[in-house]
Length: 209
Length: 209
Image (cartoon, rainbow over all chains, first blue to last red; front, top):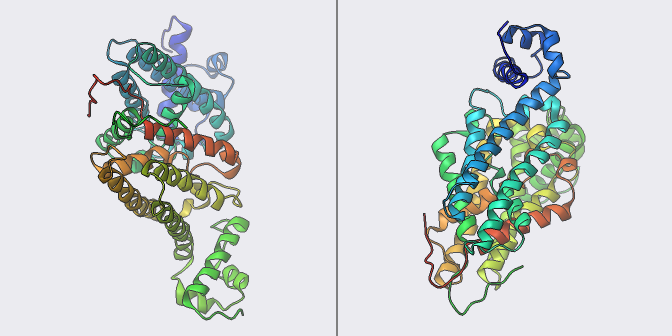
């Protein structure tokens, strides 16, 4: 048994084991005994921190999004122009998730099909967590007149929706393809979202619908 | 046996039956005998038009996209401003697919999981078919100075990617939710894509990345 001083440490070590076991066995075959063996602790200790297998797995997914949001906050707090921060945040939300699933052989949806209803609910919460960071940058960009934004929440929502198809939900890492291509794709979408299409003539007034 | 004069008619009638049977039984349980019985013709007649169950099912999906593309072409040929046509085309690609899967109980990915590799290849082709229509409108919009577009293919690609998360690939009709909400979502994304975020001050020059 490893010596761990902090509650957070042991949680993280257990979730690391869950990550490895999901890649090795998949959700259905993974047992609490496997997790205990992988960490090198008793099953009872795991139950001190998690209710069961479903809780373990959802907590692992939560942790990915928490870590992502920390990175988004970091980008949001940087001194780049608002537009550059939004672009970097959109790229990060896609590429960080890509990196997190590289060792799996299935798509997340297939891997976690047994958890589907809880997983979809969880995604809504994750979506909201990400949105909050985008809203901050959008509002700040509006105040500093760097961005033309009417409703920051609506805009943040649309920014996330527009890049959601690039998240590794329904495609396996093999199907997702090259990281480089994905990076190009998210950058293209982000640039389009950020720069808009409409001709910038002086006479034309923007039509907002 | 129904009397049908034309090859196209009988193909369409067979594919209508496939659509109904996929909703009723799912892909795995559907047999060629079921299809023949549903249409009221001999199995041999079906084999005159289709190689087998996989061909039948993929042809049914192809037909959805062909019909969608006809609708997109219609919108593309209308006399609306380019921006309004692009918006309407994005809405249509999402909502038409939504309408086409309403009678299924599973997501398309789950319904057709046995066909996955062929289905993903097919989707690439469908994506290209849709892209061609968008490219035409984008190029026309550029010529008439209604749109600011550098590379029409790249832009079309990004427009489709940005609305792909709203297609009913990995969510069942129940999970997809209300049509009205979906319409709002695609409209929000489309408006953002079309109008852009950047402040339109005269001094600032657009940075293209």
